[in-house]
Amino acid sequence: GAVVSQHPSWVICKSGTSVKIECRSLDFQATTMFWYRQFPKQSLMLMATSNEGSKATYEQGVEKDKFLINHASLTLSTLTVTSAHPEDSSFYICSAPDIRSYEQYFGPGTRLTVT
Amino acid sequence: KQEVTQIPAALSVPEGENLVLNCSFTDSAIYNLQWFRQDPGKGLTSLLLIQSSQREQTSGRLNASLDKSSGRSTLYIAASQPGDSATYLCAVREGSGGGADGLTFGKGTHLIIQP
Image 1: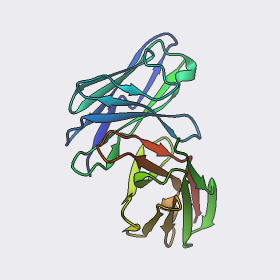
Image 2 (image 1 turned 45 degrees about the vertical axis):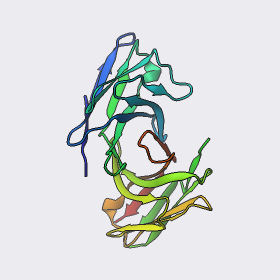
Image 3 (image 1 turned 135 degrees about the vertical axis):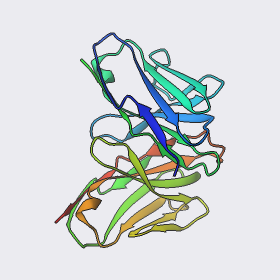
């Protein structure tokens, strides 16, 4: 199947700093990518849809000024958590649908810890 | 708003047993349904994808069924093994298949197979 990578796999940052997470589709192009957040012992919640060449669309309750999304190319989307706070500590996972099958492929996730 | 429910939340069975995980969703207008496996602290591994027009999919010891009209899916695991221990997530995708729809996840079933 198709492969999606994320970088970094884990990051620890201090409160008030910003953190960038990258999501790449390695062997296919993705005009759309999705960002999810997973709190401990909870399921994945869709945060936003990243669209290549246009603005991201955010789910209700997700602050667009705090979670900046840039879909720079057909294989790369970035999520920047700005002015991070401890409550932003979570597991962030991206996915991308292969336009040939529309099956969604998930990255391995990024564990963010804000101290 | 679509809601996905998985039952049971946790299950522990001896090795070798056949078992069934259940998933239900409130809005039957789905495009497809996917079953995933998630190991602790890891990303998602796609197990089976069922399109809305299909009734079931099989892969090895796994069989997933879909009854779209009643909003239900089951994942059947035959001859369970300790390596099957993980959290199993059910997710539905709504929309018309244009690729711009994120997934709605259930909270998962935490499965333990006792050696």
